[in-house]
Image 1 (cartoon, helix red, strand yellow):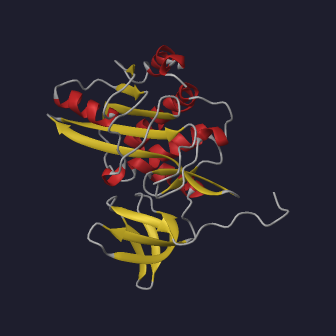
Image 2 (tube, one colour):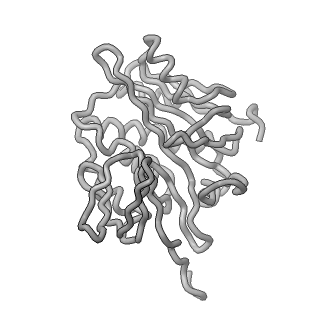
Image 3 (cartoon, one colour):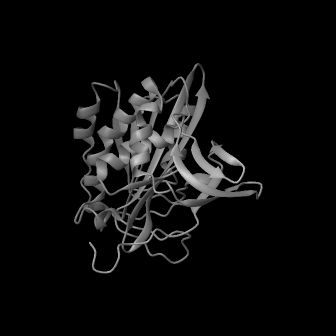
Length: 272
């Protein structure tokens, strides 16, 4: 799909969100290194008005832990929402964002702590997208940049640690622009609800979509340490609960890698 074929709904999204985000704008760029990086550059130079920045292609897109994020025009949706934010507690923001995105897309979109969106069916589990949140204190304000990357079509799996899936598997024919229409307003609503109330109202909604719940998992930290146990959802503060031989552990650091130890089995033969 060529970039010229995408008709982005900037004005309709701006009209929908202007009443709750004064000064809000939507901007679409054909190419940039990273929408998160660009909004951080702008914020540090004094441009802190609420903005949703879409890139049809990122040349240096990245995910959590510095991992590269591949994007291609029309085959993916990559954008960042930047705005001043002042929640009483930042714990669980990426989970709340995930809930808002997943609920706006499809009932079968699942969430993997702390920031991934997954698909899972008889064909196996695949990564649909990811969330990257960065913040900076600028003067008296804290500016948050919430980056979202979604596969519209599944990219080629060679070299990927996790098989990839695409949104069109659930919503045949949907394009990047239509996906943005679905999730832009619910995303902002989720962020504003989190700012006012924290993660607690999202806890049950996250647990319903949690792909790790009741599964054996491995948790590896940046220092090379690893623990294993069974995952039991998340707390009201967004910590992952893992029951280990040493008892129940609360995993709070986002600088860890959490993986299920075993693939979830598909339906038995002859079953839907």
